[in-house]
Image 1 (cartoon, one colour):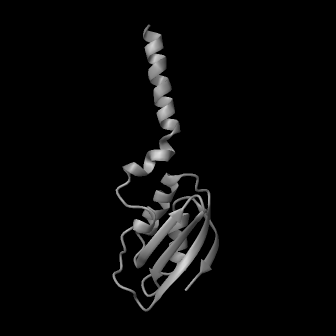
Image 2 (tube, one colour):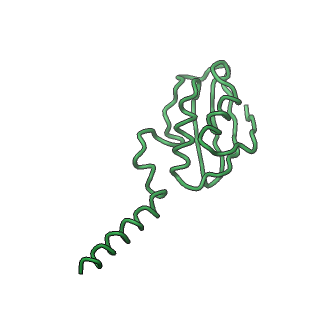
Length: 120
């Protein structure tokens, strides 16, 4: 009887850990995606939008990891990260940061930036 209980507990724990990427973003304090807080108020003259193609993201927790690092870069106005599209669209103030700094923040998470498109 004790081994059945133990096996049930271990099985439940294993299933919980296997599904962790699906609910991991619940444990993050920062919002992810389009609802991320803007660090710079208003529309600066030096506003730019860049799309970064990212390889290696596999779940919503990956989105949160990338968003958390990019939001640490000064001058970030808006951010949308999508593991489904394998990209991040970042709106930033060019007088406070550069495309290279945003790329460096993404690479710091362990994912690779394979392509960068400047939109504005």
